[in-house]
Length: 238
Image (cartoon, rainbow, N blue to C red; front, side, top):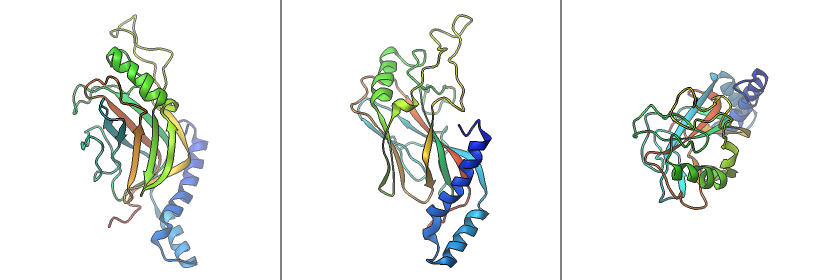
């Protein structure tokens, strides 16, 4: 993973520069002069490792859940949660890795909940945990459209489903430790070929389930995190 390997992170940085060039080339005039100007623009970008965090609340009455990428976009709930970090309109990110988590806050403003990679039976009720493991992770999928162009038509959520070897089975204590977790790796999938998300474009990530979840605990959310080289002030906002 890029979060633990400097060589792969450096290669991702090199590839990201080329992808930003391709993504921004249409902003410059045709011909060699435009090529040079676009290349100079890309070389001037301040690229750092970064991420955006998008969230959507799950329910038992829908089977498609849409994330809002920028502050101007609505998710399925028409709510921007206080734990989100959306993509500003003037910024871009070349997503080399994608994380998907689930969580159950106590409210829509809580900051005390843990991110999970499966239906943890201490966080979720038994029926809700089963629905997450079976319908959500085992049969759901992730899609991505950008300006109505389908970039990711189908990627199974089972790629992000991870039950750690050490799991919490009762109230925290000497006989029941918390879940084993390594945040830089768990719930993480590589994203090759990389995806460039640009704040000025209409990016629409969605989760699609084959049927509604049988049971959903109140306030349960899916959390989608894109990681990779991040470019501030890299696009023109009209």
